[in-house]
Image (cartoon, rainbow, N blue to C red; front, side, top):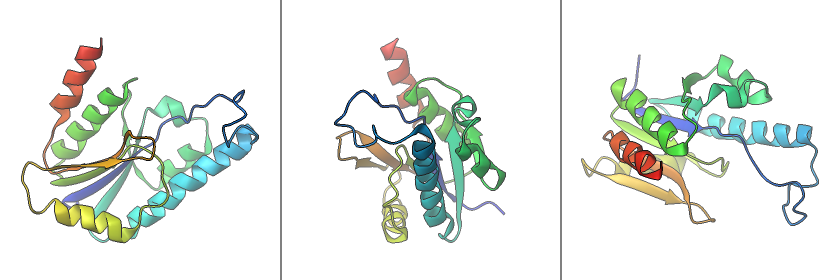
Length: 166
């Protein structure tokens, strides 16, 4: 049975410049980076799956993850192939998919931070009960968005942004 709440973790290829000695990951091998990335995603999924009455999805451009260990997670997870090359296109596709499938509340994680707790996620879902036109924005330490929560489909906003960037 489908629940009315969904959590989606958008999995994107981690990019950084290995030449930059200030990057804390520059000394790791590619295999170690992949294992670290897999572990972070798996830890997040473990937290999400411990929540009652919430469906969990992984979303990605499948070609970005098809040849690494994250692809092995797809055997047990619902997967959304958001094949757009832009983040705005991917978010719009995910919103259309989730709300088109009948979900009424969505938390979309845009970055891989394994520090989210069940208490935090439950507080976000609780906040979504109070407003019909509510969007909750979670900022990251870098100042960009790491989480969006909503109970209505705002995919048009992201499509409009994508069109204006072209």
